[in-house]
Image 1 (tube, rainbow, N blue to C red):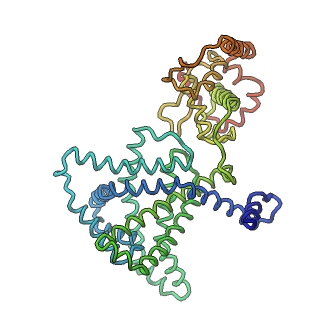
Image 2 (image 1 turned 90 degrees about the horizontal axis):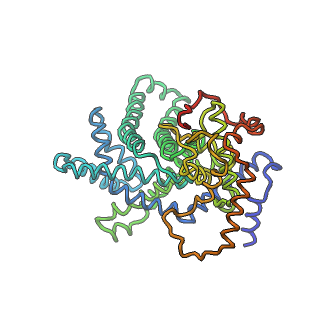
Image 3 (image 1 turned 90 degrees about the vertical axis):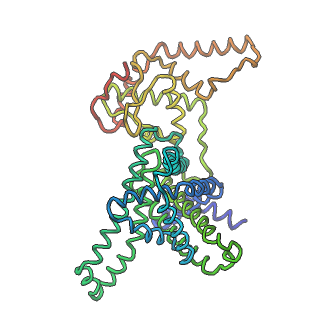
Amino acid sequence: MQAIDRLTRLIWNTDLSTRPGWQRAALGLARLLWVVFRDIQEGELTLRAMSLVYTSLLSLVPLLAISFSVLKGFGVHGQMEPLILGALEPLGEEAAADVTERLIDFVDRMQVGVLGAVGLAFLFYTVVALMQKIEGSFNYIWHIRGERPLTRRFSDYLSVLLIGPVLVFLAIAVATMVTATPAYQAVVETPGIGAVVAWATSLAPYVLVILAFTFLYIFMPNTRVRFGSALVGGLVAGGLWAAAGTAFASFVATSTQYAAVYSAFAAMVLFLIWLFVTWLVVLVGGSIAFYHQNPDFVTKDRPSLLLSNSIKERLALSVAHLVGQSYYLGNAPWTLERLAVRLHVPRDALSTVVDALAKAGLITQVAEAWPPAYLPAKPPDMTPLKAVLDAVRSTDQNAGADYGWMPRDPAIEGLQEAIDRAIERALDKQTVKDLALSPLATATAEDDGTVDEAPGRDAAG
């Protein structure tokens, strides 16, 4: 225990600014591994990986059927079986061939005409449910509460389902054509250079896997993910997936008990285990991408996202100030992510304040803007600052709850009314416009970022 305590103090109590570069990198890596293992140990990632396994089983055949139909139009549907076989290679040659054969047989037997409208709708629902479950898992990792709007969800998911398989097989086809050219063969046969080219060619499948993970980390979370952070997560996930595949293949090769115990079900049991490992690796890579983009979350203990009432009020005034200031100066509307960065507050904690202001009708989303951006919902000169405070003071109150059971105390009610009157007198009928155009607020206008065209003031009345 003493050794663990010393290691903990070394990792978390060391001032990185006083250490050489290699020590900073080592301690930074140790802290990153600490928070990732903490996330796994808490069990939420494993539970979500199990959920994704279940949803994947329901949607796997419809997903393959959709991909098969798209690829058939390009005449490359014959490449699906080798690709599935390669992905299931860690199961062992016999089990991988068995599972692949069953999947392809299911896809071949699927007849859309026999299913009818209800059956076809169910197939599409299972595929969309998988995509929605993946988005929900990544939103949890990125501390995001809201999902995509229904219209964007349908268009985004459909584009991935239709374009994704084409891009994958196009990359494979291009690689196959390049390796079949005489010029490539001549380079491979060149002493020295040939070995390097052959080694680089052998890495091509892993590069495709890393790019696939990177695309997943950029596209699926309902927020803007930087390419560098997504690539770091993709590199880690790709390496973990390759290492896990090697370890799993070794485990299958040295374990004969599974075939004896599960008999004909052995291949499917191994497939379920490998599917769980794959999804867990995907979620771990997503955590790496999140912590790379948000280093403030790399802490010994999970940071609390609960805000006190005073902090909520301060954030509400800050949001009203920034949104109103951007409106009057003609700058680009503020997004939730930019507001979180500007105010140094986690996005999901700030979202409760922004949602409260939107629910109170003080700010509104710009129509069809992505990511969502905010403008004043009504003229700032007609919005009292007290309304901003009132919006967040009642944000956690259940609108449908009946508090009639609480005892009425005239002294307490009089005190609350006195507090409200004191706040109103202190604000002296100030409006959001007064805050937005105050000298201090104008002095910080440069923090708003890039100046854009005026955002259309009709949204504010």
